[in-house]
Image: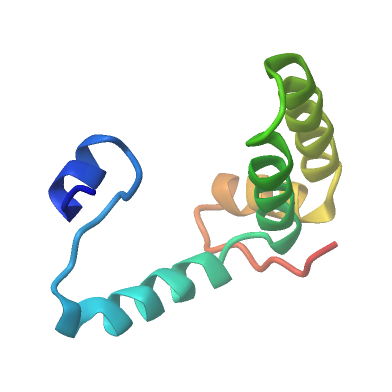
Length: 94
Protein backbone atom coordinates (compact mmCIF):
# COMPACT_ATOMS: atom_id res chain seq x y z
CA UNK A 1 0.00 0.00 0.00
CA UNK A 2 1.15 3.54 -0.76
CA UNK A 3 -0.36 6.99 -0.95
CA UNK A 4 -1.24 9.11 -3.98
CA UNK A 5 2.06 10.99 -3.91
CA UNK A 6 4.01 7.72 -4.11
CA UNK A 7 1.73 6.52 -6.93
CA UNK A 8 2.55 9.69 -8.83
CA UNK A 9 6.28 9.22 -8.22
CA UNK A 10 5.97 5.70 -9.64
CA UNK A 11 4.11 6.97 -12.71
CA UNK A 12 0.94 5.08 -11.86
CA UNK A 13 -1.07 8.31 -11.79
CA UNK A 14 -0.34 11.53 -13.63
CA UNK A 15 -2.34 13.95 -11.51
CA UNK A 16 -3.54 14.18 -7.93
CA UNK A 17 -6.67 16.18 -7.17
CA UNK A 18 -8.71 16.70 -4.02
CA UNK A 19 -11.75 14.42 -3.83
CA UNK A 20 -14.12 17.38 -4.21
CA UNK A 21 -12.47 18.24 -7.56
CA UNK A 22 -12.31 14.67 -8.86
CA UNK A 23 -15.48 14.65 -10.99
CA UNK A 24 -14.82 18.13 -12.39
CA UNK A 25 -11.25 17.16 -13.29
CA UNK A 26 -12.36 13.88 -14.90
CA UNK A 27 -14.97 15.71 -16.99
CA UNK A 28 -12.38 18.29 -18.07
CA UNK A 29 -10.02 15.51 -19.16
CA UNK A 30 -12.88 13.74 -20.99
CA UNK A 31 -13.72 16.96 -22.87
CA UNK A 32 -10.10 17.30 -23.97
CA UNK A 33 -9.98 13.67 -25.11
CA UNK A 34 -13.26 14.11 -27.01
CA UNK A 35 -11.54 16.75 -29.17
CA UNK A 36 -8.88 14.26 -30.29
CA UNK A 37 -9.15 12.03 -33.37
CA UNK A 38 -11.32 9.07 -32.36
CA UNK A 39 -9.44 6.43 -34.36
CA UNK A 40 -6.13 7.53 -32.86
CA UNK A 41 -7.64 7.23 -29.38
CA UNK A 42 -8.97 3.77 -30.22
CA UNK A 43 -5.52 2.70 -31.42
CA UNK A 44 -3.91 4.15 -28.29
CA UNK A 45 -6.29 2.20 -26.07
CA UNK A 46 -5.76 -0.97 -28.10
CA UNK A 47 -1.97 -0.66 -27.97
CA UNK A 48 -1.92 -0.07 -24.22
CA UNK A 49 -4.40 -2.82 -23.37
CA UNK A 50 -2.99 -5.41 -25.77
CA UNK A 51 0.63 -4.56 -25.14
CA UNK A 52 0.72 -4.38 -21.37
CA UNK A 53 0.86 -8.14 -20.83
CA UNK A 54 3.09 -9.14 -23.72
CA UNK A 55 6.79 -9.32 -24.51
CA UNK A 56 8.61 -6.33 -26.01
CA UNK A 57 8.73 -7.73 -29.55
CA UNK A 58 4.99 -8.39 -29.64
CA UNK A 59 4.33 -5.02 -28.04
CA UNK A 60 6.33 -3.26 -30.75
CA UNK A 61 4.37 -5.09 -33.46
CA UNK A 62 1.10 -4.00 -31.82
CA UNK A 63 2.36 -0.42 -31.56
CA UNK A 64 3.48 -0.33 -35.20
CA UNK A 65 0.18 -1.77 -36.40
CA UNK A 66 -1.81 0.78 -34.42
CA UNK A 67 0.42 3.61 -35.63
CA UNK A 68 -0.01 2.58 -39.25
CA UNK A 69 -3.78 2.40 -38.82
CA UNK A 70 -3.97 5.84 -37.21
CA UNK A 71 -1.54 7.37 -39.71
CA UNK A 72 -3.60 6.24 -42.70
CA UNK A 73 -6.80 8.04 -41.64
CA UNK A 74 -8.49 11.12 -43.02
CA UNK A 75 -8.31 12.54 -39.48
CA UNK A 76 -4.50 12.53 -39.68
CA UNK A 77 -4.70 14.55 -42.88
CA UNK A 78 -7.21 16.92 -41.26
CA UNK A 79 -4.94 17.38 -38.25
CA UNK A 80 -1.96 18.25 -40.43
CA UNK A 81 -4.00 20.60 -42.63
CA UNK A 82 -5.47 22.35 -39.59
CA UNK A 83 -1.99 22.77 -38.14
CA UNK A 84 -0.69 24.30 -41.37
CA UNK A 85 -3.72 26.60 -41.58
CA UNK A 86 -3.41 27.47 -37.86
CA UNK A 87 -6.97 26.41 -37.08
CA UNK A 88 -8.64 23.91 -34.81
CA UNK A 89 -9.05 20.50 -36.50
CA UNK A 90 -12.46 18.95 -37.10
CA UNK A 91 -12.09 15.19 -36.69
CA UNK A 92 -14.74 12.90 -38.19
CA UNK A 93 -13.47 9.48 -37.19
CA UNK A 94 -12.53 8.53 -40.73
